[in-house]
Image (cartoon, helix red, strand yellow):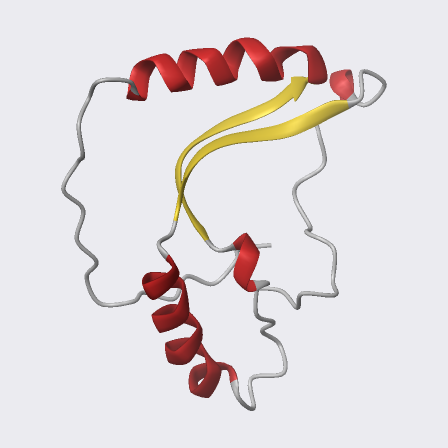
Amino acid sequence: MRDAAEPARSPAPPPDRRNAAPVRLFAALELPDAVRTALIAWRSPVLRGADSLHAVAPASLHVTLAFLGWKPEEAIAPLAELVEASAAGGGAAGLALGEPLSISRLA
């Protein structure tokens, strides 16, 4: 997690894509306001005193469904169309949250 004022840190693009101005793309679900509020309330005491952890800005909380990788900016529109077409007409999927799990970064 990171502080709202701290820019997102993501892995560097592969060396062969460094000059192509790639963007890091993923498909995600927005969280309902009630879920976002509950997550913020849960994390506040958990992160208190944990200097090595930083909270993500509330507006940045989401559920990542698929990481699409580093892509050229021109790939955004076609990929967005594919994601939207895949989701269209599918109806609401049932999702449930289990117990929170903390995963440390390996680096």
